[in-house]
Length: 143
Image (cartoon, rainbow, N blue to C red):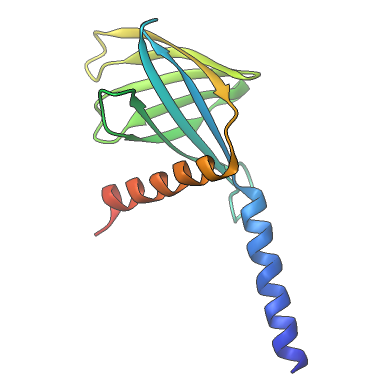
């Protein structure tokens, strides 16, 4: 009986710790100063120690489906975000509640400015974005 209680307590604490280590943020802004865009960025603690890794997706409002991004964080809050299938690349720098940078076409000929601001949303809405991120990852990487 004591073992079962200890096991349940350990499991509950592990789940709570894992959930606390993931942080999600929503950014809204524009590409090229006029095309509305939404970016969802989720920081996930690395279970092996070290820096977190990121899950991300974005879409052009009312124009495109969600595009999954492969994210690498560099020095000084700089991020390289490559679209699934390498249909484009964003290089963004986080500065407080903003992320600014450029979107680059795969051949490198187009470089378009990107400006984003962090948006506050409710827990239920954030969970909806997290579920969409999970579904998108499944669609792109399930064997």
